Length: 263
Length: 220
Image (cartoon, each protein chain N blue to C red):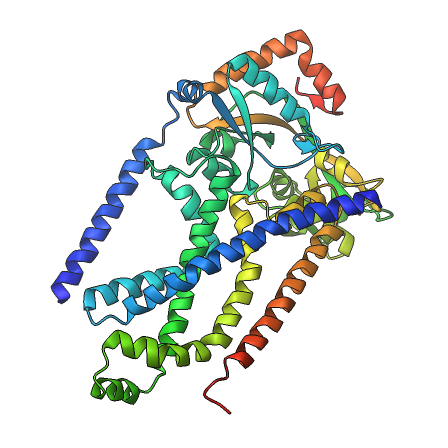
């Protein structure tokens, strides 16, 4: 009886190893363009966030990235299909082919460039320091020894860890950027480092965060669209971006949503 | 004022997803759990060993991880199987993961209930010439049901709240919907979701109390 069990365990392990080995070979992005053209749809992963992809007051799906993606798909000759994803698992979605690209104000950095194929920058952004209204702030040195919050793995986190002063603060990572403002409002932290575009929409009139203000602008950064590593769609989209820049289409869109284009 | 009613209606709409997931999970996992319980009590050793290992794996890993593996696994392994596109595929994947997970927990509750019935009753049944299924359905089962109502009730209430885990694979359930407002800088919808769960659990509590009373047969 025991021998039988051991054999079964062995068989299980061998087949599992085989499956993983095969999977590793299958994860190449080559021929992505023809794959997408054959299906006729480009599945675009997004999260609901203004001003990039969101529903307006009348319930219409809109935003800078939404409009831009629709225009690009028209040029590519495929139908756009927007799928709401969980931002924490975006790379998994891409590799599992449940989406074809991440088009949602994705900040370009070297780590992401290593794992995904990212277009050239199309929109400029910055990391900003947010604090409660009336808090004293003269520069990042004011935050030494204070508690600072940012999203885990975000560009904001990187800014904190790389800044000579901010790295001396107590850094608390959160899973969501939006939770950071809640911490700030609840008084559990002294400052938050977030995206400029996000901070602009989340604070001020008509929000729960009217008493939170942007006190400083730190690292500049750029947004790009991410495809599977090695995907040939990326190059195609870059070309379309160039056309749209020459046509002035990009500029008109950026003006409509209050964004700054990358130079 | 108008905005508040819009938010409430959108939250309610998304809570339907939690309710559907809850109902489907119960409908399929309760019977499947019994099947697994029989497997884990089988006298055929390889089967018993296999089923118990499976239960160990499912109970030994976070449901959140199982959801991720269930939905992304086929695509990542490059299998020919894939979930249907759009929101429906995500919901089906979540439902399957929930059914398997809860069936394993239920199976252990069933096993505990069945093994708590004194052996003498089986022997008495055998002496009277009853077959094994006859003994199970006519003697054991009713007593088991009565004994397992409180632990099953516990598990069912956990399930109500666990349904919100489905958002990890982007099922738009109530907490993910509230997150949409948190993204716009509005916090109260997130806390309002608690009311939905509280009311649901309140109804279930009354239901299970009633059921326990109703099933207090064998007592005068």
